[in-house]
Image (cartoon, rainbow, N blue to C red; front, side, top):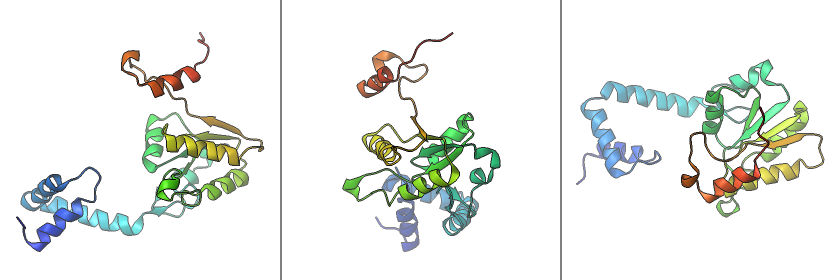
Length: 200
């Protein structure tokens, strides 16, 4: 059953969000129209401002309202350590953990030749230039532990081969509170390869 063209367009527009199918989009649209018109207007305004005002940081490629994001503008962050992540959500997760205090570079994806995503599309040359310009002493490759994430990390490492720079990879393994019986083989393999001496 078709509704008015405006309602149909609202439903279809909501379906662009990840994980939102036809039924969920209808439920959202009906909620906004029945009880949430003020919230809908605020959402519309915020979307419009974000779509026109949010850009990529000229230094790290993260989302920003300005040419250089707040993290890159912080002098204390330029301490010779650069963490490479695949997406802004990965950067946010690291920031929320609260332990890392260096700089970032956001790839906005990973290498995927099948999908036509090569080094140019994710800014590898910009990353390499930044490493050279800023005198980075440690590059942390925090790409995801997927086949594509691993391939991306190895590609970056190969491109920096021969330079005086420490290249590290985030440890992968058994999560805190996890039980061995429920851990998949890929995670266990990484845990065994990354084992280290038990210290006091």
